[in-house]
Length: 94
Image (cartoon, rainbow, N blue to C red; front, side):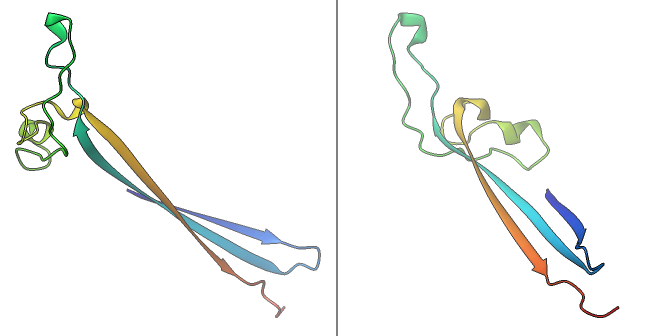
């Protein structure tokens, strides 16, 4: 999902300029953090390094990892946000 914000500013001379920015957010799921030995009082992870969906986007299988069989919530969530700003100079013509 992309968001775009446009801000129009006017200085004291009545000239206007606009600033536009957009934010791109990418979500990636890393290694599995499910403790498989929790019921024994220990700690053991399965070593799955990255989430791979078992099915197509929008299905319940898309929430299960094809490599380890765990739900996506057990995988470390990594969010990468990129903000892009564009600026156009003020209008000098009236």
